[in-house]
Amino acid sequence: MKLHMSKADFTSRRSFVLGCAAVMPVLAQGLSRSHSADRPASLDQETVALTTPTAGPVRFPTGFRWGCSSSATQTQGATPADNWWGWEQAGKAPASGDGNGFDGRYAADFALLADWGFGDYRLSLDWARLEPQPGRHDARAIEHYRQILQAGRQSGLSIWVCLLHTALPKWFAADGGFLAPSAHATWARHVDFIGETFGDLADGWMPVNNPFSYALKGYLAGTFPPGHTSRDEFRTVLKAIHQADFEAALRLRQGGQPTATNESLAVLHPADDGAAAAAATADLDAAVWDSWLSLARMTRYESAFDLYGFSYYYNPAITAEGKIIPYPPGEPVGPQGYVVWPEGLGQVLTRLRTELPGKRYLVAEIGYGGDDDTRRIAYLTAALRQVADALTDGMDIAGVHLWTAVDNYEWLNGFSVPFGLFDHNREPRPSATAIQALMRA
View 1 (cartoon, rainbow, N blue to C red):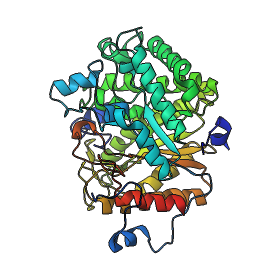
View 2 (tube, rainbow, N blue to C red; view 1 turned 180 degrees about the vertical axis):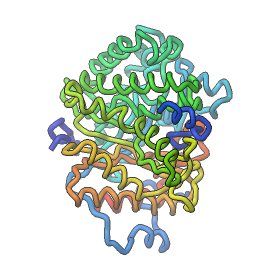
View 3 (cartoon, rainbow, N blue to C red; view 1 turned 90 degrees about the vertical axis):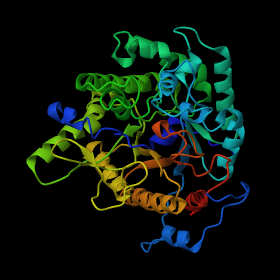
View 4 (cartoon, rainbow, N blue to C red; view 1 turned 120 degrees about the vertical axis):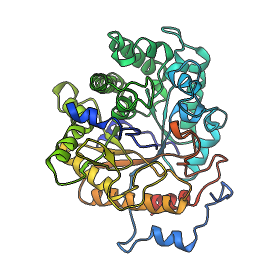
């Protein structure tokens, strides 16, 4: 049965600082088991114990939304028309190929998720595929994305649409991306095109994925295109991309669908008790939080978003030199270089509620990257307990979107770090069963 979500319904991997250990001083100076898809994977006794902590079962209210998130490049692969393709060709990232094969399997993927009990799916529409040359839209790409969105809705899923998830059209990037004087007008035109072309098939909008991460990786850390390491460019792009997100939401919500942010959020901890570490932490904290909160509090943008969503992967510590190090100290570091710490999600929820009280929130992205599915189950269960506790305390959280459904391309990690509840062959991991049990509790 199709669940349609109106605005009223929602209104009642590598780390995001990948490579920043070397460049944070610059900022501080100025700032699987195989199972049949039609039956649940069984859980061994150790896994069951991890999912049933002594605090009691984790339960969520009726109407709580469960979903999965993805992106075009990671599920479809890069295209020669985008700037990530060039990054791969230059040897700066592994080849993405056809992603996880989503282009030929999307209908079956949607049906699989619906059968397992998920209600939401967030995907991105690749700007470069839709507009490979400025002002020239590809009719085949438009029709293909319309078919994808139609299949998602026909499966019973509510589809959240993201307009920008890392990759840019090559021509837009060559003009300077969001640093270009013409960027505002170009972006507004694209947003209007998306609303007019796909608005009848979108159940919700999430305009820009992780604006802070986009600016940091591309313009300060230099690990993503265009590979710059400029403090001034980072600040300029951070402001521009956040404004692009809020402006897009104002335009898109006119169609009646709900809108949501997806900020990269973390609560930062000084690495020691000294004044220098505290100052460096405050500098980075301003970039993570104040860069978008200042817009959210402006009269112009106070109605832009129905949901304040965010991604959570870890909370780091900041040294006196402005370097990012794992936190909490002494805990095991995961394959992507950070401590997988579920209690950190609770800290982010508390901070978000304090900064923007009385709003509705969404855990727009959370996941575990690694081969150990038992650890994935333990982490996700403990993290979701943080969400359940926040709900019990009165925080209005609409739902959780997990990263991700099916193993996909993970940018600089390629296909080496699996995040999926289902493997590349669409076989469910035990973690899929554990999440399904929580959804049904």
